[in-house]
Length: 201
Image (tube, rainbow, N blue to C red; front, side, top):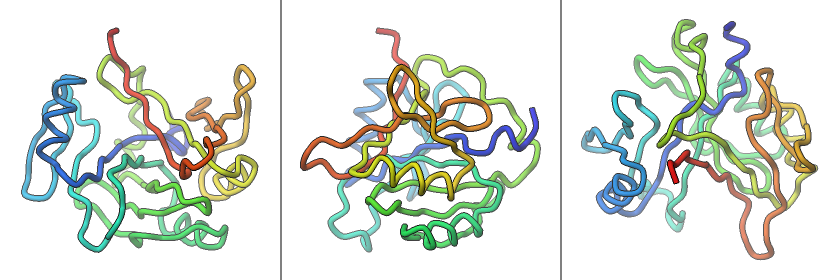
């Protein structure tokens, strides 16, 4: 698989929460995840596979509710961050390197949904096939937004996604196929990304 085929893929998820201990206990019981802890980060593992992380909401993010955010691969993180700003979004954490992992920026779309743009640090990682998700692994994303058509236009500029449809639902399509669906939010619900996890029952 070429590195371009991995562009536009969801490859990592993070939970920002007010209580890391309670969150790790909860998700361990629900999904069987284990957590490798450092002073500021709890990395999610299923067996030997790393899936994401849990961290405390930064003090600077006053009023931010606990929420999940996803990492989407792009060919150039710095260019994607500039595109986000030019397309009406916001850069919350400017582009920076994660040692031995890659480069990322935390951003927000014009309707207020958080996500991260990311590029692997090595071509080998970028080219590794994602494979089918198993039980306990993340498998799908939904964008619930106040502006479906605006979201389609924004993400087309920032990522490699094209708009598609599946069984009557609007979708985002990467080179490898559909990666997410798009729904109109319910009244009073803010725009947000939602991640799905495979379960046995």
